[in-house]
Length: 218
Image 1 (spheres, rainbow, N blue to C red):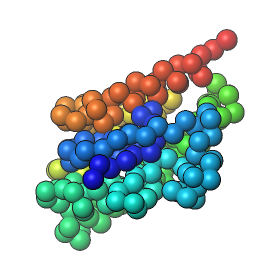
Image 2 (image 1 turned 90 degrees about the horizontal axis):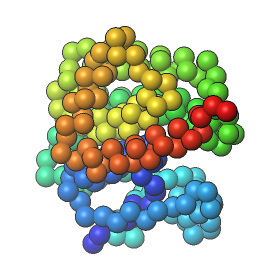
Image 3 (image 1 turned 90 degrees about the vertical axis):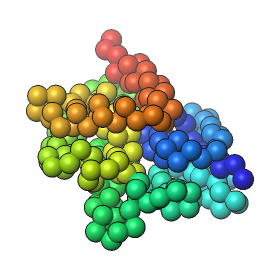
């Protein structure tokens, strides 16, 4: 059965799932939810996800929400091995920590800024919001001090999640390469993944274009 992913490519959360799907080689259909038309507010979509947020994955009649949960589910069900989401308790705990870091720190900062910029149509990013992002970069730099990837020496779904968020943040609060060289090296390493273009690059380009429009100065 073909998987259905409800979402949009520019969405960092959707790109997390797209990276996972493409890494696993899963067959899927992207069913675009037009946020401007408030399709996520319809009664039909509420049944799929009461929180009315994208992405949502449909698999055999079951609906799953939240990009972190969806990615973990996909690996457990469809991966040929557990490298993307290890079964070992200690290794998985590290991956989970990075996923929670993305959700609670990085993505929270991104969400706070995009609400200001996209929803409130404010081209000025408050200094405190920028500082929150830079603080997130500092933590990420620390995570990468002793490993090539965010949760060890192998790419995991934590890399997918953080990459989708950080590559988006970079268009709002640019990463200082001199201050955060490990972050920049990691991002470059991620671009070399064979599924990077389909999973993140195409949607990121659309996100960047949106940023250019909303942040354009009069």
